[in-house]
Image (tube, rainbow, N blue to C red; front, side, top):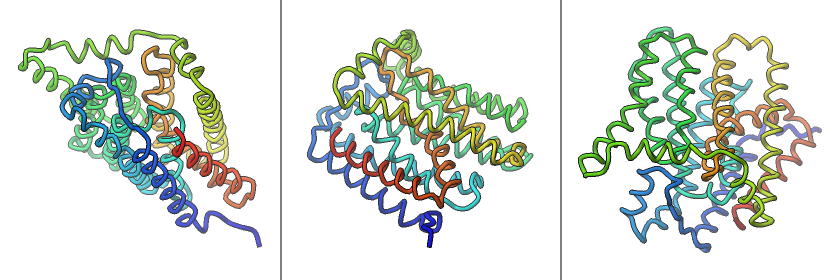
Length: 334
């Protein structure tokens, strides 16, 4: 009798997810999780770090819980939008894996919170497209959630065009687009006004975003990779994951041609766009891996499609087990 892993999603996803969560918690408890937030992070992140002071490392230990919440929301979104032929929990485990297992800076609360905000924004954005009628409150909320992210990680400004792309894909009105943009701008302007009221320059947030996103090149990423054998190992696995995801996207599109003009395919197009918008940030000279946890969102969906389409293959079961073991090892040793 052949093993069909699609019939045991709870066992094959929930238990490994718990193992990775436990491994990550173990790491944060027994290994120093001090996080230094310099000017490569957003103004709000730096000020939160100053606010909590020496106790910020305690806050940093909760990053895996934020990733777990993000994985659950992303999985519910994939189920609600019927991205796959049946209810699959694979996006949960792959999001947890890709959010925690590549680079050291992924395992901090700022990265986790930014990724969660993007997922929540996508959730609200896609809910707003459920019907032909306008859902301005969903669009506004989606814009606000996404607008908070540059305050935490300035590189997140690259995700802003996703609002335009989403409205174009789902053929929404100009009023809905303006509502989303207004929601996006509001947190940045409001935070700038608060800083101005506290005698900071009104342009503090904009200067932070400009300075962080002005330097381009592979030099910093190369230095980051060459600092140790583990960094090189992480980068190789990361690049293999991206290549595999591209292959998964091609295979999914070929095998599901009849879905080209359906809402599930439109949702996948939005996720593809998110990945494409995030990739250029790997070339930024300041903290090039800052949005890898956001990139984990489309990677998790794409890799899930590949495993679901080959759910009866023993080879993919072996690959799945290897991925889980590597992730546990990474979370124990980063």
